[in-house]
Amino acid sequence: MKPTIRKVYKLFATGALLSLGSMIIVVGIQVFTRFLLETTPHWTEEAARIFFIYSVAFGTGTGIRNGDFIRLNLIGKYLSPPAERFLDLVTDLVIVAFSVILIIHSLRFVRLGMDEQSPALEISMGFVFVSLVVIGLAIFIFTLENLSNTIKGTIHPKL
Image (cartoon, rainbow, N blue to C red; front, side):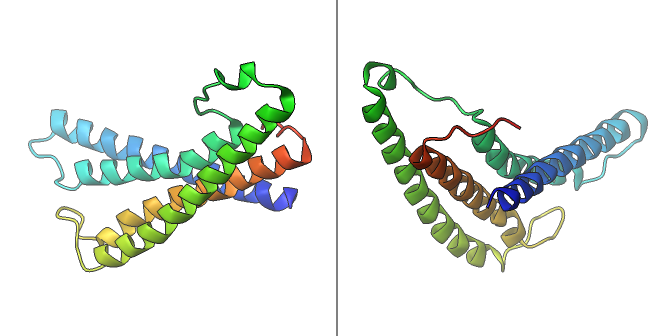
């Protein structure tokens, strides 16, 4: 499973990098045209927003895997190691349940958005709403990995 999770991690990291890079390019086009040309393309603001949304969606997976999110250790530091491990297990199980609910409802949301079009780019809003599914999958996959590591008693290696 470790080689597979590494490939999934690289997929999320690549998606985050491409989304962020694309957003920077689009904003650069917008700034360049605003100051050097008489008109700016009407699609740049919307495209930058969509790329930002996707950079957050893909970045969620890498953040979870790397342990970059804020964690409150206030309760855990007062617990015994077995109790802290139990708290970690319960927390991960709640997060996995949340991610399943998020995926189910975001798939419904994507179906609703398939008939809508974005005003400037004129693409299906379903494409934009898929970012919620990506976030849900990222949370699900990498929290399951954390849960597995907690059960095994191993610590996830930093990448």
